[in-house]
Length: 126
Image 1 (spheres, one colour):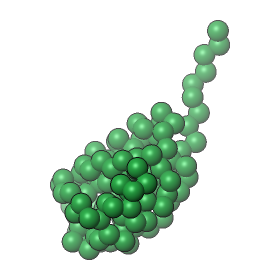
Image 2 (cartoon, one colour; image 1 turned 45 degrees about the vertical axis):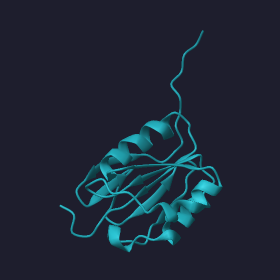
Image 3 (cartoon, one colour; image 1 turned 120 degrees about the horizontal axis):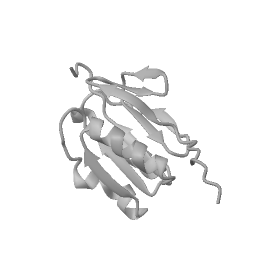
């Protein structure tokens, strides 16, 4: 039997700190959505208080099985009404601080799961 390592084609988060994450060799200092299928786009919010149902509606259109919501430096939960589109499409959502969301995304994407991370990076963090 020949054993070969799995080749992961999903974008990965290489590093993180207060107010930024690294995607590959790029340092990103604004909120972003990254998907294991190669999706990546700016998530236009600079603070938790700016989030609304339209932000989570974008996530429902990705067609993933799970969304990991990174809520910034501390754990904060989105309003239940904002999640309606995800619920209707039977897409799971897990909420954690952004650094934990980065680690969890990498693990699940590395397993070949169809997942996205919506990472809130607030201005002035750190």
